[in-house]
Length: 146
Image (tube, rainbow, N blue to C red; front, side):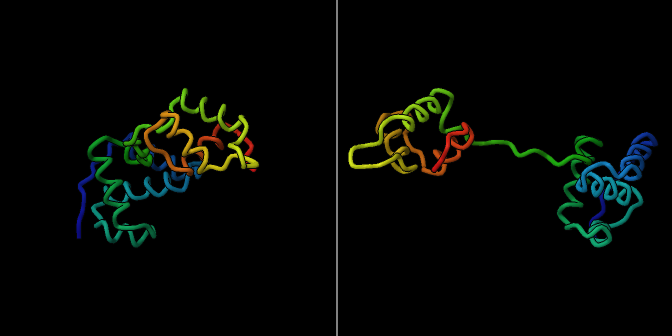
């Protein structure tokens, strides 16, 4: 029965109540506001999770973010941080588009994603790339995929 001691200031409490009362915020933000208000009342995480129909882990994360970083962090979902660098930078994307617009290899009617990926490796644009990355890049560039 884990509990996180939350001490909301009067301004924070009013803000949370205003968020809930307005009903204009996202469902996630409304849920987080409810979690923080119930946690301040001293309720256990499992009790809060059950009453709000959210997971125990969600309650724990929201409370931890509030304690560590404040109200905004507690209310808003943490953005994922991209750990891997992009395979294709601007130059690589330009070479991919130029390649896709060029004539396909002999004996082929058109470029396939696998052929494009292999050609990018052959041209040493990248060391390794999968066809899905090629597809996503072409889609992002609004290249018409057939």
